[in-house]
Length: 181
Length: 130
Image (cartoon, each protein chain N blue to C red):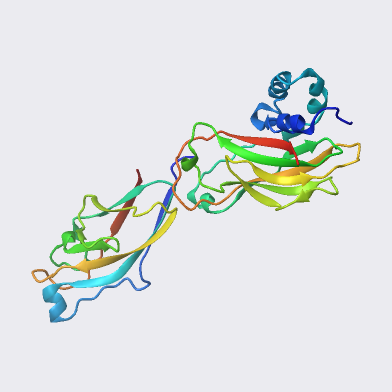
């Protein structure tokens, strides 16, 4: 679909297209964001979204100290679905631990590992990547003439700990961002 | 995540300690690295030490040997802590690492006023998450 609008405007709007996993693909949020944009651009932006869904409950638990020293893996935990487009996009991920400051969470504690993808031309820079509150690039999806959605499956990995950590129950949000590249 | 903590204690395969010369008998004797402590924890901790009895036990009908003649020193400390039948603070975490290993020296003070013989003793290490 061709846009009749300046590219700059389009990029600016896409930059804030974020999806919150724990709210089960927060379409309401997207709608609110889009509602602030000019109506003429709404149709195009609304079609370019990324869907993140959990294939299984994303719950980690520890019962012994030895478990701290080995990775905990939820296999095939997440599915990321991307509509094909005729322009290139960057897909980024970040994590937010609710109620905790960044220095209370070990760096590189949580990772995403790509285990399957249907895209034949996605540029994946690293199969396993640690996520932090700062968005990090998962992959670049070049223009795709296909009609079917592109699927990316990820393992969710809690990496071994080496230092003390605040005890208690943590809640985290995984946030996926999309921007035109 | 709850507080998770684990302490393992090891000592030499031959746990017999022998005091059989006059100098050691007079001055006491230190056995370096007699115990090895391996601590795993996700939170700060401390260790207390005690014995299960106020005296060392012996199969022979000989005098009582007070457990206070034994003392321990962690490699993180310069001071020996004498063992008693009540827990005494011994050491605490020196860093925030999940896993640490420490050597513990054992000292037997001069048993000059006690009967010679073979004695058994138990040392109990108690670790507590803080």
